[in-house]
Image (cartoon, rainbow, N blue to C red; front, top):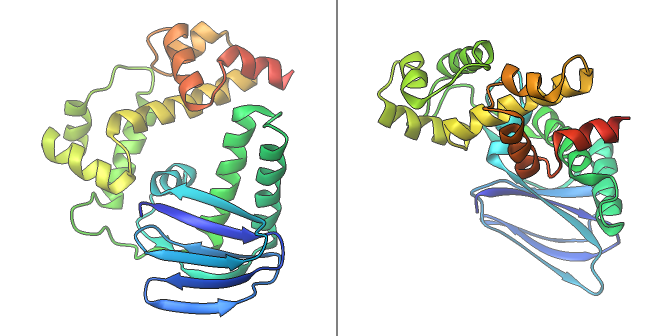
Length: 241
């Protein structure tokens, strides 16, 4: 399993749970949640009517949400854990989904970031050092700083590989293992994050925002906005009005 799974029971349920080789039969209290980290086999069987919120988090989302550093670790496995703030966000997910997502995909995306940040801050362990086959944190920071400083310029694998002091082939493989996505997708995500910030300041038009963040033009930026956030830059302005 490549995703981290979090299960929030919203009613009293009798569960038979398994996380790797650990097993537990219990009735978790409403307000607790279970955590099954990526890479761990898990199973939960319940009796009667089941009302739960199940949230899946990709490992790459942990990296993107942690804007100050890169995350090498994993979530701590738990059968039942209490976190009031995460529970509130899980209920917002449930309410938004039940209502047909009236607040739109961008609202959902930003709620997801808040949720993942809570996971990182309170439910994650990190070994600190980079595992074998991955880029070390110093190299990753150098790459991220380079991208931020040259966001309005064309960027290719050869250039980023030179920043990392690796061959393009080895850099691409090691970066994907370290971050959970290709260098190209990572650059695009940083460009989108910056573009969203600029759009919300309303200090420049969309064409200038696109140029300042490295997109070929407004249309190119708009296509990526719709792909990642589900709405166009113009809709972001309308929603913030």
